[in-house]
Image (cartoon, rainbow, N blue to C red; front, side, top):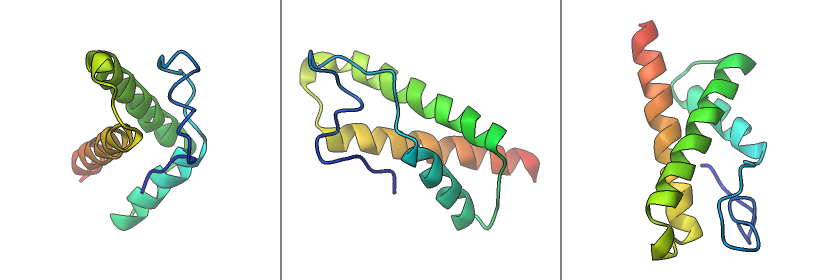
Length: 94
């Protein structure tokens, strides 16, 4: 499960704007999702998926900025983006 610290402050800065940084623990979560598929992966692939997650979260955040999204909603977006991207890559390689 992709998770955040209790304040979720790495996605939002003090002005409640999207923060470009995404915590490194998400990379571990990407590895764990791969393991659920019975697969391992390399750092290059993890970095690519990490970029997809960051972009997806940013797009969703900007799209719904006025709605004051909860941190849980943002986490759901990130988890969904990771799973879709990994599934796409695994299906392409089989």
